[in-house]
Image 1 (tube, rainbow, N blue to C red):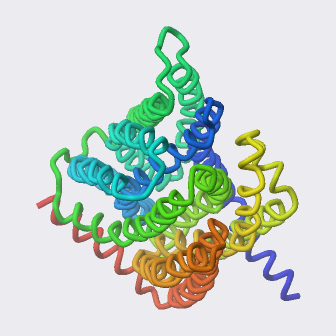
Image 2 (image 1 turned 180 degrees about the vertical axis):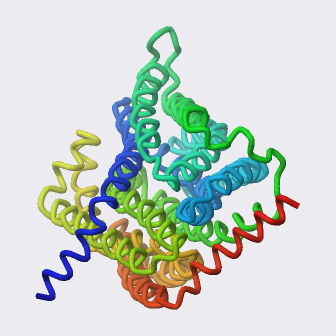
Image 3 (image 1 turned 90 degrees about the horizontal axis):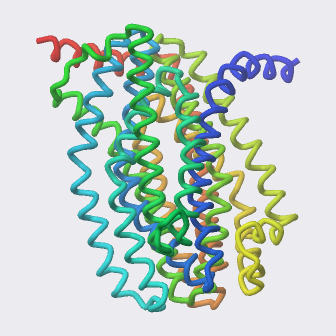
Length: 472
């Protein structure tokens, strides 16, 4: 009887959740596929390990800064979904406009921070051949910062109004742009000179600009077709709303920065072990990141569905949305854990045929298998909490467990105990298991509080006050 009630409880939400999550999952997979294509294309050059290692260093350092900026836009998940759930599309437009202004303001800061990574790289004991390719690649990626931030603004706006298919189309088609760009620029086709890893960086910049343009065009098209009033929205920045975006997005941005940052530090430390260890780390990290994209897409859908339910003050629907997303995310990651344990070598061969890389990369995938379930758990719980307006709890969990437990433990196992890269991954695995367990507990507490109506009332009151301020 209890089982039937539970299945009915989940089934009510499963269809709309999957309908929203599927294009977002495909979009996230498309996002990760771009990084995999870059790794595979540069990995076919003469010195595979050096090229893959350079792309690994450059991309993880760029992401550690850029993802902080994109995380600031996550406040749009809460504001847009709550406004849309309450039937106030005009308020969604206001959040979009101010999200664009926020992107323009923080782009120069982020680009400056990324340039400061260069002396940091030179100060580390990293193989010179890797460093000579990583720094020019990082400089090239830096030019794609603004298109990347604007893409995330348009994406959060559209998916907050249940318009996820354009997001999927933008990323899937951008992979074709990136693939063609890699083919032309890395190896020198279509009249271009061969540029190696730098060519891969330019290809990524072009693809990100394309994604931003596609979503902007669709937002304008949707407004023209449905007369939603986007073109009549206030064009000047509204500082209370910008502040609200920062207030909601800063903890999420910090969380993403902490998460990517810890892997950036781990990558830099593993780089001291040589090109083979670094390339093996990149292959395993790409694979684990690829599986992570599925619960990340489900997490985005959970944020929207929970936020929309709270916008219409339906506590039961918000609770159901969170648990349905949790079941979908952890179920998939459990399957991936089995794949990592059973066929790790076959997975590594997708990236490279270099016999020196296959055994160490396979060993890292074996370690990754043990945190897959918890990685899915923490990702979906983070999205559900964000939909409820709580972006601080995930930030604190990532700070405590990644930086105070996982990284020190991984460094100890890697260097002091002599386990190498698998030791670093083991330490980070312990942190992920702790984060997943903690966020599951906090989601359960938050979900129990929905019946009191506190969070929905808070967000709607805030939006109402902002609307009144803007009209004045």
